Length: 422
Ligand SMILES: Cc1ncc(COP(=O)(O)O)c(C=O)c1O
Image (cartoon, rainbow, N blue to C red; front, side, top):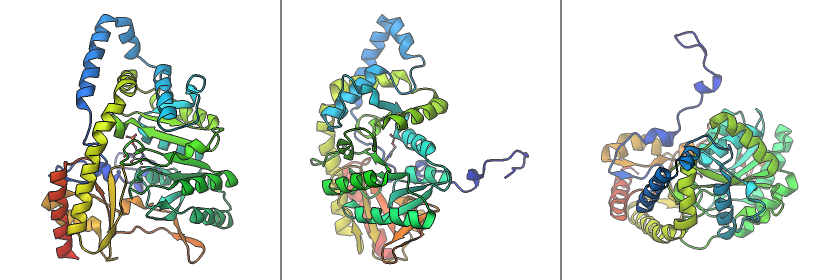
């Protein structure tokens, strides 16, 4: 497609739009329930780390020169060892921290790992399976790279394994393709906030083993949990061959653009090859800051932060229950989001946001972008897949950023506006 200057843009630019979550960041509103921005952050801890680092660099210019330089694509060994210890100790990931820390690698945010993984696995026409709805930061790159996205129904416990199995069979029958990838966010999913019980985690792992599918476990919210969660699916992957496990410092530390992962060796090699061309390496200074945080501060920061997030969730759930019109909401036990669906199938939360919510100082993320712009969904009754269509009567409400009193006030305001409309 040539533009007015004559040079041609790549085809994807004509059908992929800017991320709707990113686009919403430009609005400044009093009641912000949109992007998954952490609102509780140990800023005092980071101030302390930064001043300590300043002193260290002043005293040791050689260390400063190293830390301000290029480094290994997959991360500095000292930082990977710190991450390996935490993954093993807190999440039970089966890696020996002394001899297997090289299984861990970092990326610029887990977003980069999602993109590089898709880039590594997907040729146009390949099939991937996701929950319906699913994190748009995964769906959009998948479509951009030409994947056939096949979405599978979810309930209040997340994706239904039996339907995943069916979707795999239909993919083979209809597209002549075994899916390459199953994507899940097991702990407090984005966007629905649901958590997969252990029985479903096991079932999904077995299905992927039986059908030779890579299971992508995106555990972005694993540390933001109000009660003890089932163990990661990755704990079942004793040989490190089936599950690509992703974590991120964005929600549990600060948005310094560092994601960390444990991937099967062959997958990791390709992903890091890709990363090498995308960014050469992740900033070492940032790894130094996070290394100190993960070694010395995270436990205390989480102990303080999680109850505060829980209060925000409670304020939001209570205000939805008392002020929203007929509909259904999810009941997360962690993470950043509640998902709400109106009983009225004709309601369009995107149109309502532009016309009513934004002028009333309110922002949320309409549900439609969490369905693929092109793709298929499993039609259970028909035992077939049909083109995926977004459910416009849904919305994702984020409780992470605003304090509880603003959440109560804002959600009540939104509820009253919705009640007038519906
Ligand atoms: C489920 C999920 N995965 C990945 C990401 C990307 O996070 P980051 O790139 O900050 O690590 C997000 C961000 O909100 C997310 O919600």
